[in-house]
Length: 426
Image (cartoon, rainbow, N blue to C red; front, side, top):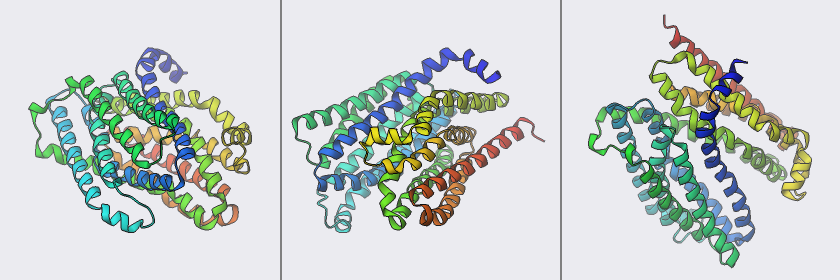
């Protein structure tokens, strides 16, 4: 009852801060539907180039300064003194340096990429990827500052602009029947990122303090935190693709059904992503202010709210998995409904692990999230070796479920123990 009362007490705040965050993350889900049309229209060779380049783009954005965004959010949210402002400056500087370095590396490595993917014509792709990496990293800087101050309405405006511009350009090309190359998609992304950066920079104008400069110890503090988040992101990136890779080797016939089920079950996690936008700066601020007793109740109330919002869709996943697969994929992957059932039910557990990981990162313990991912990865790989040869894609889904539950239990225990220890130091 206490958690429900807390949600009711903060209902206006939840709507004013949480709803814009949900809209921001929701635009990513809608973009996922746009990509379905892209896949249908692009020539096979062009889509192969896009798929390869998209994977390289994700690595480039992560290594090109994207991993510093969370550090900026966390440290800027701690307060409004010169210390936090200088730390934000340090994060911005390092993100720009990494973005530039990554762009140069991608551009210079164009010949190597072409030789590796000899059957594909990657002409012009490295330069466009460099543009996407730089524009994405830069557009995320004012966005991180806005999130740190819970200015999610402004973030929503920027994210919607980015989505409308990118989808609008692609939509025009689709309607005109002129979408033919991966290059066009990346050009649209660069334009959208640039316009989003201009808008969010204008909206976050009062949150930049370049006159305060950067201190060397501030750079060290930011990078110490950011390197751990980079490790977590890389580990999670590898972990989330292990099952597909192993299925491709051991049970290739189940890869498509598994991938389709995972994509469909993952759409609901936009609620978790939106909640994390609010939770990270909130817990960071509460922790820095010494409000230790309020953190666990706030995390649990966030879990409860997310579960309530997700419940109707999860019930559809669990009760009507075959019908959903038939409706969304036109009967193509109906045999994969048991996979959909398991991964859909797993959505119940996702908020717990995600929110406790976010809380630990906000309290200056991002390594808990890293440990959780590593533990889940080891457990998942071991289970995959046992279950995939016997059960194929269904076995992979069971292995994923077991690994997620195991990692969630660990991060909940570690985070709760740390909070309790800090509340009552010996």
